[in-house]
Image (cartoon, rainbow, N blue to C red; front, side):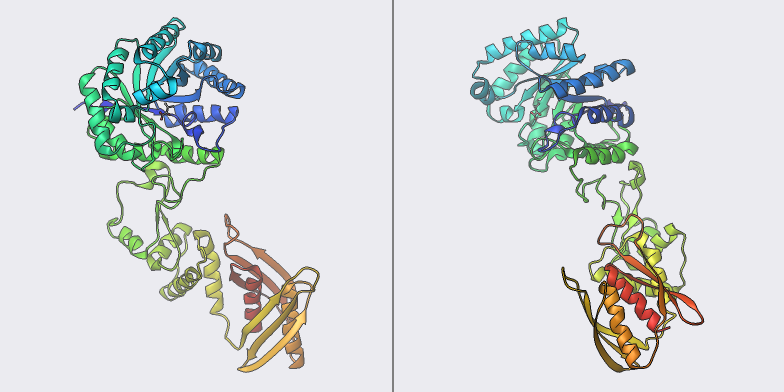
Length: 505
Ligand SMILES: CC(C)C(=O)C(=O)O
């Protein structure tokens, strides 16, 4: 069976830019346009609304100059208005060749916003389409508020379509402007139209107000849509448009027998990340296909199942989208997740050490600390290090104070062979005060402490401020130099943990 080709029109640069607070400068618009056409390989892009601003004009000019030189000019579209030809003049100056003319798709909009009759509206549209044709500009027509038009004034919609199919148009674009359609209605309304005008190319433009955009796109495909309007990360007016990555995955997985699209799946993630950076709109971590967490197995039972015939995989394999599966570390991760991460780092542990490391990760997860793959070598060295010390000296409790204008001070309580000691001291910093209190206890007992000769702090690469922190302290006695390490999300506490190890050497 030959597959039906569906065009993907990306409107990130027009409807996507209508996300509240988003404005792409000209250079970013050009970068995005190139990426969408050259890298993601969408069929068409809508890049701006005509007559908006000087900046927008410059951005469009830069895109059309590039598109002209590289054979993409017929794939770059502009939103235009029924304005007697002003949008056409603007497009001619900007070098654009395809207009998406905004007209009224519901009687309600026509009578209350434009205050015109259908006949007046149609004649003004004919005038603009003629002017465009004379300038060598191709026309697609948007029926704004089409979904409400089908709800409330279907006779008007069909009268309008009867007129439009007589014009020299490339496509008719049917938007669910306010995102009010259910998937049942999308199928019903779209089918009525494709049945009546089987030779016309209809695009569907979904909005996501009820989180139904992807479901509605699926129904429009079933009802014969020949084009779909999408945005990267689902950006757009209010709740946004139908998200590119989800729709592409849905088409490739659920319509693969009958439908064909040319978008490159492996580029979806990198394009999505770039738009996240340029727009400043964070991708929710659970957003299908592109969210940070969607390919992370958290429960140990899932990692275990992945080892046994991929029991917890579905068709959404991360590699399809240029991503990798991850195995989270935390209180529910278990041995299998840890082993997966160790494998990736090229590390091996015996059963006993693996048990201890697992236990430590569970403890950290219980304290709500974020444990990453990068933390793992630090945790391992901390846990294995602890095997070397006997618990002769225990730091039972401490209070550290740090305030503006007062010297940091500490009260420390510790037991040495079950004998209890408590001291208070000040210092130049919290850790210095802590060490001074320990020194007082040791001096009173007639014992000496090694000299601290170096103090280094490091965090695992790529960590954020709530990550683990390792303090490595070098100590010196009369006859040896040695190192102890402490690991904690709090820097001073990690130094105290390293010190407790020194006290037990
Ligand atoms: C401006 C129009 C075409 C639109 O985005 C919509 O109706 O959703």
